[in-house]
Length: 185
Image 1: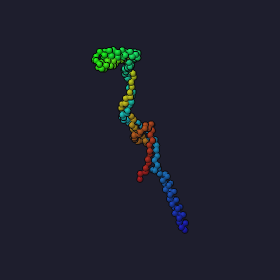
Image 2 (image 1 turned 90 degrees about the vertical axis):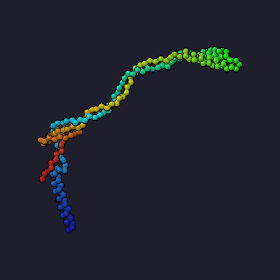
Image 3 (image 1 turned 45 degrees about the vertical axis):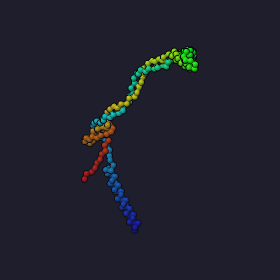
Image 4 (image 1 turned 120 degrees about the horizontal axis):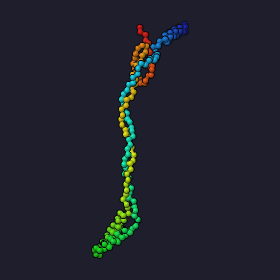
């Protein structure tokens, strides 16, 4: 008998469950329905934003180029030797004994140095320079204000009533709406 009672309990439970499923199947309150409404007007909402802008700025700039002096003389040691001899003769005219020897050496050294300097000055021509215009450019970063779309204010009609909403994208000529029907008791 306990088997029959258990079978009867399962049969009643199955019947009740099937009735609840059929009753809830017809009820759309748990699942929303969607439809399309006609768009009456769309107004673009804007805002001002600051954006970085880079641009290239160029100009012509005068630039002076320098050329080093050119060596035009020979590599002759003659002026240095002649300067040393003249310096020795002049130095020998001063002093006496070992003082004369020192004056001769000093005259030789000083005369050779003067002769070398004379050769160096005459062997080189002064450097030259010339100026050209060169194009120079740089990148300039600035801030610029722009007006950008920040969404859309949409006016639409559904079942003879007018509504308004804000959307991030332009809806076109119709907009998808959720339709809720709830019974009032």
